[in-house]
Amino acid sequence: MYHCTRNSQESMNKKLLTLTAIFVLGLGSMLKAQDAHFSQFYANPIYLNPAFAGTSKCPRVSLNYRNQYPVLSIYQTYSATYDQYVESLNGGLAIMLMQDEAGDGAFATTDVAVAYSYHLKASRKFTVLAGFQAGYRQINLNWNSFTFPDQIDPYFGFVRESSEVPPGNNTAGVVDLSAGLIGYTEKFYFGVAASHLTSPDVGFFVQDKLPTKIAAHAGLIIPLGRKRLYTDLQNYLLPNVVYQNQGPYNQLTSNISFARGDISGGLGYRVSSFNPDAIVILLGYAPIEGQWGVGYSYDFTVSGLNNDLGGAHEISLNYRLPCRTIRKKTKAINCPKF
Image (cartoon, rainbow, N blue to C red; front, side, top):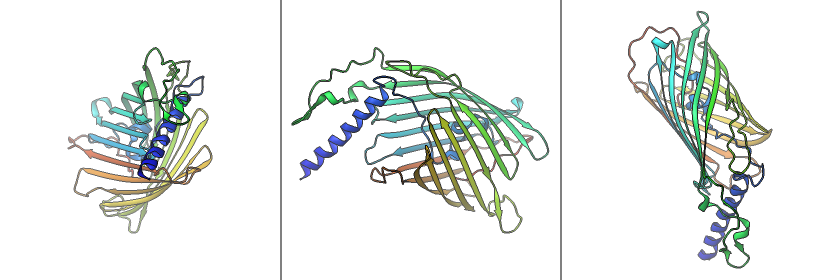
């Protein structure tokens, strides 16, 4: 019985890798790359919009990890960013490192980028941020990890050699540009960002341009109870929403969180291409006297896949370094603490 179960699991993994090979390698012009997404998009602000650079005022380090469909362990994303406000530049600087792996490492995308955001205090209560990001994207294929239909023997499984011809180069690299705008007050913020402005070619066999991604996002700060606004012990609600469109794909993620003191929590809902995708459970902890915060989220799949593949786990960690005394021209954006 164990032997049969093991073979069944191995067959499932190989079939999934076969599908990955078909779509990733194109085998025509089928590949239309789609960027990785985070349920805790507010915990990875630079990835969402480069205009967020420097909005915490003090130097900030953000780490994010996402494991989608953990039963198969085939989609994992890692992200690390550092940003800070630089008074002499009247704005923020950021550096971002990110790796997205599909097919258990068979297909890996690595991004390295730097961003600058100009901070303009348009009025006493309203601030405008304009950000630009330049980066380099490298895509790697591990050809030996792929399996193809012609390798299948009806009795013995994946034992044959494939006739598929590998690409001349297993690595592709492109320059990648992004830009974004944000407007905010103490009570709300909104913004829009465009990634892959030049639609770089990321194909291996045929030309395959990466579609420009448009992201529009907004959030509110709703204090509850007495009017001691934005103090650490104030109860407040933080609804957030982000809409993203990339080529034929679109995604709408909305969530609402409640926070008091150290602890916060909330619920989110995601729709992909106008179809229900996932319900998101959000938890966070950020000590009042500390400089760090940690968040966890779980995506419960409600699409046609149900939750049989394990949904998605996501962890975020941020740390604010000691801040030099500066003459604040703008205020930090209040976002969820996890």
